[in-house]
Structure formats: C-alpha cells, structure tokens
Image 1 (cartoon, rainbow, N blue to C red):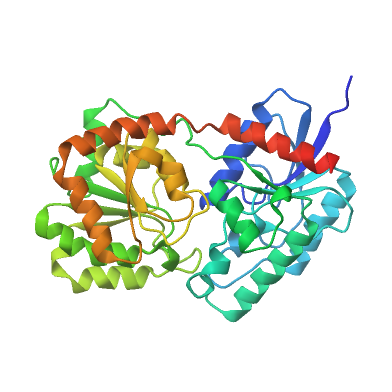
Image 2: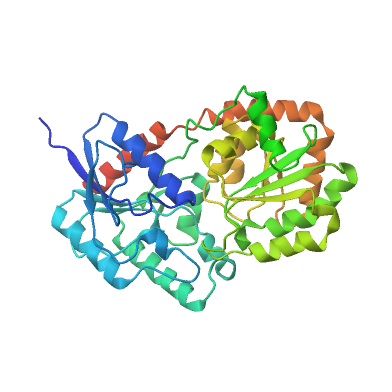
Length: 393
C-alpha cells in the first residue's frame, strides 16, 4: 500500500473571522473530506474546541498569544510564539508544510517542502492604506520576503492574483499554483418570507425599499468612503435606497477607518436613516440579509478573489463591483462594474441597476448559475495538485 503524503498545516488562522480565516476553514474541511493519498496534521496555537475536522490530527504549539489575538491594531505575533510553533513542526517530520495565509507565516528550522498561500498583493500596492505604522509595514515586508524564499510552491486563488504575484512580488509563474474558493452550503436562496422580512425589520428598512449590501473588512483599501460619496447621487434618482454595511466596527481588528466612515454619514443628514452599520453578522444572519437585498456592492481597490461576491451570488444576489483585479474574473456575467476611484462612476452603476428591472432579473439568474461553478471540493483537488508539485519539485 502506498504511503500517505503527510501534510502539516499552519491552522492558527482557523478561528480568524476575516477572509483568510474562512479560506483556512473551508479548504481544510474540503481537503480532509477527500478520499486521497494525503493525511493532514493541523498545527494550532490553542486547544481544539471541537470545530476542527474530526479526521485530522491536531498538534498544539505552546504560545503566549494566539495569532487571532495578535491580529489587532498595530500588534504582531512575538518571535517566541513563532519559535514555539516552528519547533513543534520540526519534530513532526512532515512531507509538506502548508501555510493557508502568508499573514501567519513563520520560518521553519527544518528543510521541508513548503507551500505558502499568497492571496493578493494589496499590502504591496497600498501600504499606506493597510499599515498603521512603518514598523508594521517593515515587519510585513520581512515576512513576505522570508515566505517567498521558503516557498517551493506559491498557492493563490485567481488568475489575476497569480499575475500579481509574478509582476509585483517577482514569483516565477512556474512556481505558482492557482486554486479556487467557493461559498459554504449555508449561503443559498431561502424560501422563508418571514425570515427575509425580519432581516429588514431589524434595521428599519421598508419591505419595498431597494437595498444594497456591502460585506467585508472596514479598512481604507476597501474603499467604502468612495461608495458613501457616491450614494447621494443614487438617492437623487431613488430616494428610498438603503445601504447595509456589514463588518466589524469594534476597532479591535486590522487597521480600519470606521470612525471616518461613520463621521461621513453623520455629516450628511440624507444618509443617516439610509446607511446602516450592522457590525459583524453570523453566517445565518448574513444569508437572511443577502436574501432581503437587491445587490452586493464591492468597491474595493483590489482583491485577490472576493469571496463575499460568490457567497452573495449563491444567495441569488447580483454584484456591483470594482472593475479591477480578480473581481471581473470571479463575478463574470452576474454583475456590473465601475471605476472604484470615481464616485460618479460608482453612482452610475448603481443607478443603472436600479433603473432597469429586466437587467436586475437577468443578473439574479446569472448570479445563481455563476455561484455553482465554484466548489470547495474543486479547490481542494487543485490544492492537492499543488502539494504533489511541492513534493516532486
């Protein structure tokens, strides 16, 4: 019987509520569910809480703080914590070691084929919008440089991102493997009018009012200020349009501009009752809100994939998005596109969508079909091919 390929995984991002946390959870669940020649050991920085895949081995490294606790404001993971995890990996004798996010990368004191997932080049393109201090920026540059040197294979999530890794980070194209992301099964069209109505009632949004939703981080590069600047022009055409902004407003996550966004709304009386900051929502609440909405709006300056777009499309929701990076590749014929640096062009796209019922119907149909083309099993299959490439190279 052929020996299984033993893959160690840095699963410290499993509990993070940002995009790379969801990527870690969904990809690992799909990998562990496949019947293949791989076996997986998840290296974590906290005791298992029962959420990890039951058929994966778990290795707990002793750290003072978890990576999720370190991903706050201008803090970072300590060298001691990284060394503790690296020693645990060294003792395990893996055939391959996989980091699902360069964010949580730490150097290993052992020669083992390494795969690192580089999701995007946002930090390199917009450092002033991502890092609160020069120290954070320098730490990131050092981490990325080390990860590039260590990675036998670079994994990424779209063709657009692969092009970026080559052009911006200088990673050779023949060392990059592209996989995919997908929506969890919880994201779906629901036939429950009462649940959909409640999603609006909670936020005092009338049942017949057009509703746009944004989902994601509230960071400067997400470009929400441009969306807010565009909204008054939308209201000139459709005075009862609403916008729900879904994301953590606590200020305890990555560098954000929540205060600036909320101040903009406060300074524009016409927006106060029409723009809603919901805070972080559970998946079930988000599904309800998606089903109650007319479209997702994604004004980001750059994305490596754009998972909320696929999750929204799985709920039958069209996407109105930036015509940049991976978003056109992912959304395809299920949306409309705009120049994210032009509030007037953002307003144009939203007004076009609102003014054309036939267009809205067509995009909803396309959205559901488009979402079905993305599956986590396909992502896992491509990830396995990446691991094989790392072992053979």
